[in-house]
Length: 166
Image (cartoon, rainbow, N blue to C red; front, side, top):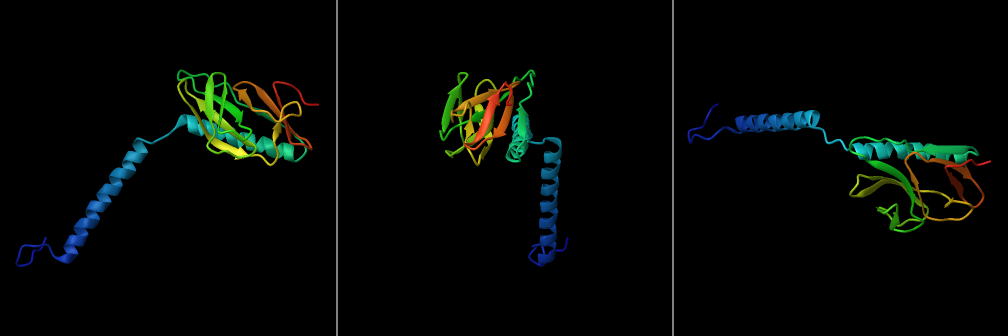
């Protein structure tokens, strides 16, 4: 390190020291993210179920019958997953669980998780047509292990939970 007559670092060397410090900080951040990742299992599982649900809607849109199932993933932490239709509501209660929609939109349907204390509904979409059960638009919750069949009808998507669409 070369100092000028007053003992201060020269400009070029000061920049090199700052770059070295910034490099060390970036390395520490990178190592932290590699060894201590912020992975939210419930969110990733909900996202996976949500992507599968959207694929089944596409099958129904193309004239087929979509088949959607939230697998019963019993573990020690017991996070449960649900398909929830809000019918324009912000909040809907079923099974003694309050599900909160992140939006108040028409035909709003979400994959929600519940960990025993709170529900989270982060993966949602607005369907082009309303979901129907028995030809009527109603709020509903499909639970883990319940097969949901989806067929595109003139009035909307006919959802049959646990049965057979003919």
